[in-house]
Image 1 (cartoon, rainbow, N blue to C red):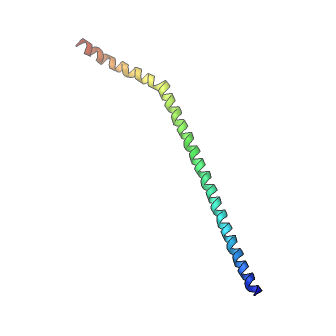
Image 2: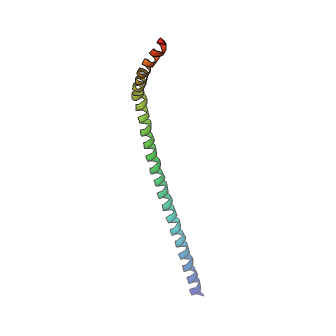
Image 3: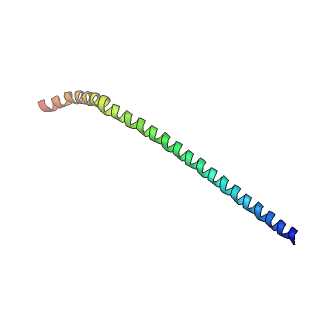
Length: 84
């Protein structure tokens, strides 16, 4: 009787340890996933910040130059239209 009870307790203890081990593994996997998500989000945020910075440079420095060049190219054709 005592050995049967001892054997049942050993099996229950083993099952419990396996469950705890599986839960610990799942928790570790969840932590790793969360860390990877954070790193991906941070990388994307930095990339977006760089894109926005480049757009600001384009808007403040490059676009006025392009507009002047475009207006200069259009001026001769406008003068021809006005004289016709």
